[in-house]
Length: 113
Image 1 (tube, rainbow, N blue to C red):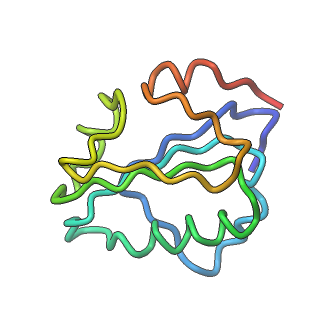
Image 2 (cartoon, rainbow, N blue to C red; image 1 turned 90 degrees about the vertical axis):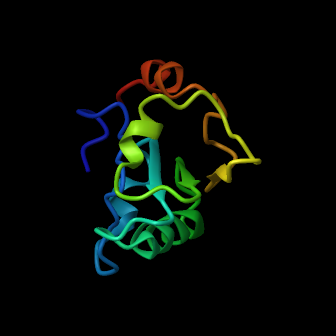
Image 3 (cartoon, rainbow, N blue to C red; image 1 turned 60 degrees about the vertical axis):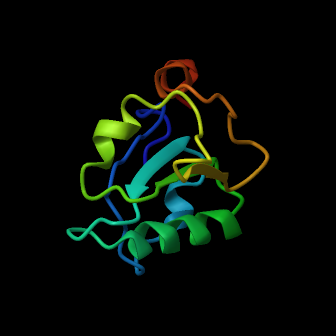
């Protein structure tokens, strides 16, 4: 990763293969979204990546969207906060994560380096 080039990342239904070196991205603020009903990219790939980043105390947060398929971006790019009744819950990998609930407010407060 290049924290001097990227201020943040906001993947949606991306997953991550288990052999990727997560230590390369611990400093980049990441907010990832994934639907638990995604039949295209298994949600466990994102869950596993988040657990690895959690173990590294990364600047990462993960929102899992209950009953949402591969169209997580439709929800993620309009996200304004958790909705426990719908099963939309954000998890934080460390205390350094920005707790801002609105996705665009969060994104535009991030800085490079």
